[in-house]
Amino acid sequence: MSRTDRNKTTPTHSAGVRPLLLQAAGLTLSGLLAEPPGGSPRATVVAVHGGGMRAGYFDGQAHADLSLLTLGARLGFTVLALDRPGYGRSAEQVPAGLTLQEQAAVLPVALDAFAERHAVGRGFLMLAHSYGGKLALTTAARTPGLLALDISGLGHRYNVEPAGLPRIRRHLHWERTWGPLGLYPPGTFRAAEALVAPMPVREAAEVTRWPGMFEELAGRVTVPLRLTFAEHEAWWLHEEPDIAELTSRLTGAPLVRVEHQAGAGHNISLGWAARSYHLRALAFFEEQLRSVAETGAGAEKRPGLVATSP
Figure 1 (cartoon, one colour):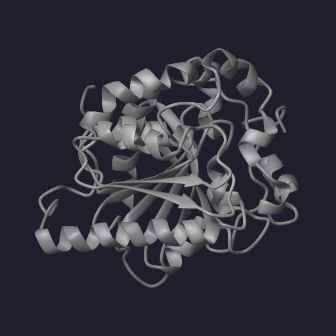
Figure 2 (tube, helix red, strand yellow):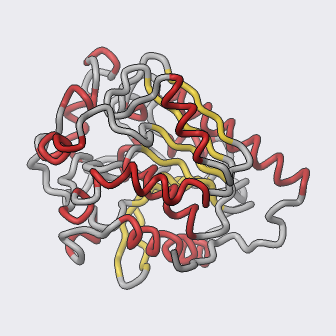
């Protein structure tokens, strides 16, 4: 799987899910889209994949219950899963990838371009996994307009010595990334061959810097935030003292909720726990939309984002 070409297209997607391309900041971003049948969306969930994966992570093909895209659309949301810059179609344009700050400059432009052609409802909610969670936090810290964040598989301190991270990432440490085999439906790893992609070198170069980057940006995140750690999460420290330290840094967020997902490994959205996790994430988004409706917060904002400098 480590040799899978990140330009490789996913051969199948779920019924109602279709590929799309977006032009943003001189790049062509590929992705997958699912829209609710017979009506405008309540809001748009932007799904952001982790390192070494692609957008199809959120449309798992090993079992019908795995797909966030189909579930979200059935519940009235548009779900947009994008290949981050350096993955999918844009890998040809930026084969070395982009830094987090550079990706966080591209993503709002892509969402504004999407909003020009598609109904987005109340606005954008972001659901992100692992390295995608780093991008979600970086984007929220520098760009107004997101309604809420839901992030899985991301902490602020690694559960591995920083000096070992480049070597572990290079060899895609299997046990840390997946956990016990029984957490995943039969056929998961065969289907995942179309999702796995090499991590671009500029992205990989920043991996060890994340603890310091988090310290710098955490206080500038000003939207409701939910964090989920899998029962078998092995990349991040997530015991009670670690969680207390993490949440203490998020001083600007009006709400910070931390949950643990039973029966799951790091790649929650590809395991048997995917449906449970996705339902909880969408329920969290439902709460935030209700809060917006009751308070009128965000009513004056346009559906897209407002790009700013860091």
